[in-house]
Length: 175
Ligand SMILES: CC(C)(COP(=O)(O)OP(=O)(O)OC[C@H]1O[C@@H](n2cnc3c(N)ncnc32)[C@H](O)[C@@H]1OP(=O)(O)O)[C@@H](O)C(=O)NCCC(=O)NCCS
Image (tube, rainbow, N blue to C red; front, side, top):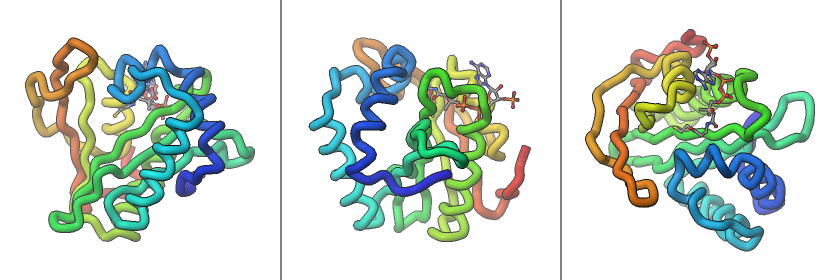
C-alpha cells in the first residue's frame, strides 16, 4: 500500500533508515549523513511542500495487511513541462526480496501515468545494483544507456544506467 508521506511517519522512516543504513549508504548520498528525527521531519516537510506544488510525490510504502512502514518510494522530480518523473525506491533491510518494490513500483506507475498523465517515467540505477535493475525490468522499464561518472557518492564517481518507460509502452502488469 502506498500513501503520501506525512510528518507523522517521520519516526518510522527514521527507524527504517537506521535499520538499513549500511545498504542505503551504498546507494544514496543523503544516507551518508548521520540522520536524526529533526532531519527526518525537515525532509518530510520539504517533500509535503513539493507535493503541494506538483514538483514531486513521495510515498510511504506499507504492508497491505499491517501498518508497518517497509520503505519509501518517490517520483522526484516531476517535471510538468516535459511530463516526466524520476522513480526511486528503497525497502528496509529484512523486508527485501518479498516483492514490495515491484508492487509499490506498479502502483506508482499507475499513479504517474493515469493520475498525473505523465509521458515518461525513468530511473537511474548503479550498474552494480542487480536488485534495482531487476525491479526496473519487472516494471517494464527499458535500458537506455549508461552515463559515465554521473553520481558522486562520498569520494567516488559512479556510472548511472538510464532506464525508462513511456506511457505509450507501459503495460500495467508488465513482468
Ligand atoms: C532495490 C530494492 C528497492 C529492491 O527491493 P525489493 O523489495 O527487495 O525488490 P522485490 O522483492 O520487489 O524484488 C524484485 C526482484 O529483484 C530480485 N532481487 C532482490 N534482491 C536481489 C539481489 N540482491 N540480487 C539480484 N536480484 C535481486 C528479486 O529476486 C526479484 O526478482 P524475481 O522476481 O525475478 O525473483 C532494495 O534492494 C533496496 O531497497 N535496495 C537499497 C536501495 C536501492 O538500491 N534502491 C534503488 C535505487 S533506484
